[in-house]
Amino acid sequence: MVLHGSCRCGNIHLALSTDMEAAAFTPRACDCDFCVERGAAWMSDPAASLSLTVKNRDDLELQKQGSETADFWVCKACGTVVCVTADLNGRRFATINARAMDDRHSFQAPVPASPKLLAADEKQARWAKLWIGCVTVRDALSIG
Ligand SMILES: [Zn+2]
Image 1 (cartoon, rainbow, N blue to C red):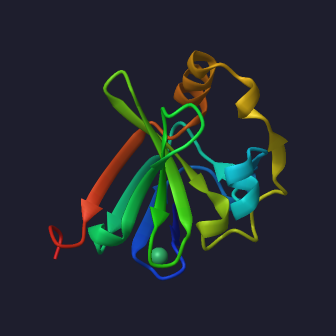
Image 2: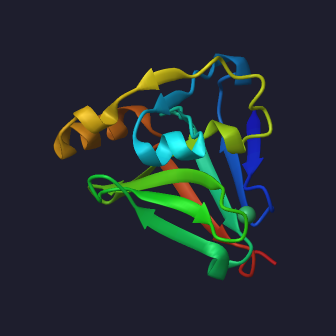
């Protein structure tokens, strides 16, 4: 199935192709200040593939947070954080903000997570295991 999501204004669209039912996802509520402030809870399926479509690149801001090894994708027009990506060993991994997904009310209640307690290399090992390992980014201009 494909689970869809977007930022509030629709500039950034997410399509997650997964074998998991929406109800099988348990988002992880990170307890760092950035995520708490924005009410972000992260969900991923290592076997899934994620397609990101950006209408207006000027309104996309990639923010480095914490250990500076991951990029938070923020829409400047509406302030929504849609996902986080990290490039590890030449491969791009991602986790998405459950709050930005159309099916957000079907997911399990978020469980607390404290990745800030991990060292940078421990974080990256965790991401490579948990996060979506197939990520493509499309520009609305290039796909018409
Ligand atoms: Zn937006």
